Image (cartoon, rainbow, N blue to C red; front, side, top):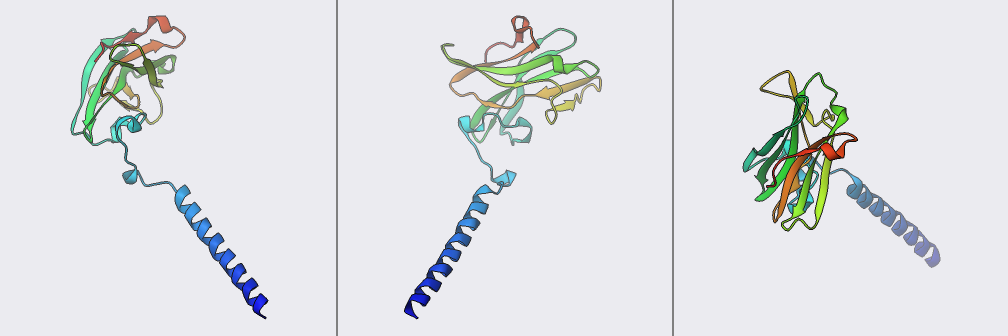
Length: 171
């Protein structure tokens, strides 16, 4: 009789433990609501700048004209006390934007180590809007990148023709 009680206790303890593990696993794998997702510094790299609350900005730092009505600009802003940059391209709505790519180039201040970040094609879903100043143009943004203690610029090139890229000035 005593052994049956022990065995029953072990079975119940095992069931309780398994249920507890399943509950914890479900909580850990559930997606967090957007408002709960927090980041800072390099942890915000790759985030969408259009959903941020900006204390300063966003504003244009530099812009350059490209060919066929395309232009590239570097945007910046401060959120949660951290400074971020991202690329934005403007292009004619009737053109074929998928033949182009833009990105942020971020380097150490001495230009010894550089990164190509957020390569994005104009016209990308969820990143493109109609230009509020002219319905004949569209605007696509890249993800944002932390830019404290670094220099950055935004670049645009026609796919397959890396040598003919146009970049903003370093900021």
